[in-house]
Length: 265
Image (cartoon, rainbow, N blue to C red):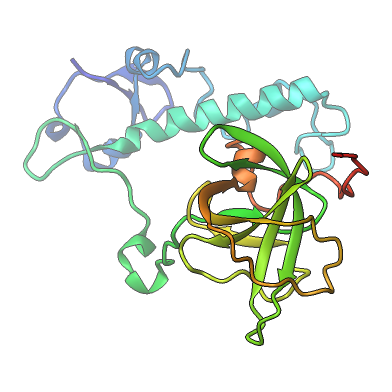
């Protein structure tokens, strides 16, 4: 069963039931999918003026000086309707290009996907970087921490230098008056610049080794002594966990909120 109509030289659409070899080769370019195929593809009814690329001038207001759409007079509903209808018509016009006529064949067949020419050029291909997640370091924001017994909301106290001479830093979070100094489980050092706002994590939950601190540090300018307590494994959430799967780097973030003066005594 044919899925094509043939657009004749007079522009009239007629059913096509013959073989490709029965047609003049230029006629192949005038093959269009018929209504049955358009319905199967969910493209709706084929308009009678499908070949008219400026079909909208008969339905919507146009500018008299150039015949283009007059967007000053179009309502938002009309503009959206025109855009959707134009997309549907382009799909109808393009569907016939998905068929090819193999050598010595008598019927059109579905061809392979059309690949841009540059896709075969390795020079133009961009390297694919591994997916990473944005991890907030800036003091005064809330985040989530999992110490092995469920998630809990913690405050980011920030980055602090250690009293060592190598300039290494440690990341501190706090919950209900308890503070923990954390190091990355992958042994990657924290940024040495204390004003760094974000780091990168290979996982949505960054594994860390956490050590309790005797008190919540308050002065980032004062280096901390390296904690000597026994570490325990934990995980801290990245921005993608806190803001949901739809959040992407560069999206708007909540404003800075200083740590509230809570009394945990």
